[in-house]
Image (cartoon, rainbow, N blue to C red; front, top):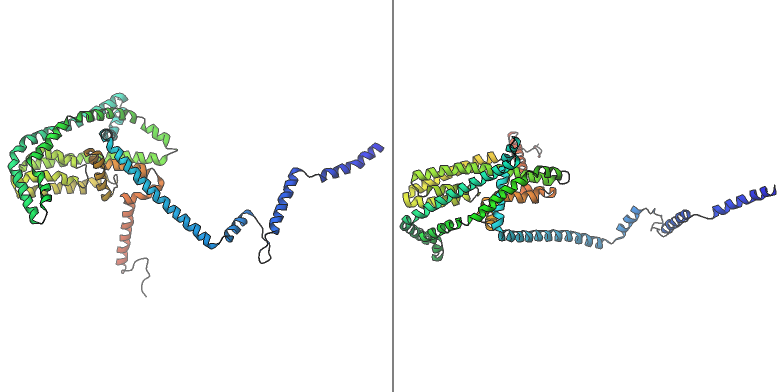
Length: 451
């Protein structure tokens, strides 16, 4: 009994001792409570009221206690930093573009045929897909399309060489006429106040020896096209073989890079439509111009027809490049009547093709402003030569696809570089509103009618 009593008497004491010894968690809670009490005691405001110090209250208090001058200075510094960062990015982008342009120019002998093969592969890809779907083995379809494309290029190059050789053979017959024409042009330039040095620089182009040397050098360089043709043929065989995997690769990239997939697909579709339509219209334009020059008796009509076809790929300035040589030789053979006839024929055909037919067929596939298109012709001609001028639009579309279409943040610049579909819709809506307001009494919808 005594043992039981002693046990009962000790039990409350042990419990009291256990309760008296705090645990680690209890100590931490007490320390936190003491810290909050200390902060609360030292946070007496001027009006004698106490403030509850939650974390967001502390941040608000720190913002309120900062002096206004320092806050304005920090805001100005932040704005300056953003502007400075944007300026640095622009300068870095411009410097990178210049370095890339010099690099592409340095390897232009390799890059130009590779880009030409890329554009041709994009244009011929539907034919290879059609052959594959109709039971043709993939290897045979790829080889057939590549060889056919290269054969067409070789035939065109052979026709161009033949026309140039014929022109070089007949050029000495017009030596006296060219010299007389150069003298007439020089006298007219002197009469309007142009200096003698500038006149010599302009009329020097009518020297028959320079004409002969130029076309002879082109014919000699035609044999250097062998390496160009080898690169193009090799690329035409390899690129279609790799293009067979492109649809699967795009499906793999779509979950993670949907904008890039969209940009690549749109680029291929737009380039294919532009090149196919331009090629067809260029053939029609060259045939009509060649027949007209032949009927007018202009020498080297075949060469000028080929020139008109090639210049149809050069927007804005291609028309003027194509019309100058026929005008010169038309004046030598038929006088001003032939010159006027050539201007009328070339002008009508160019106006119908470039202003009516091509915009309706191509649609919004290009969507580049006239200024940007002209600059792109100059830029790519400087970087890659004649091939760059012919491929100026496809290459600019490639740059836009990579830098603008693939980045959602940069798509706002599409309107600035020529995609004016939405802008035209807004302008049409505004014009309609003005017309409706005028019919209603000359009061726009945004204004209240007079009393």
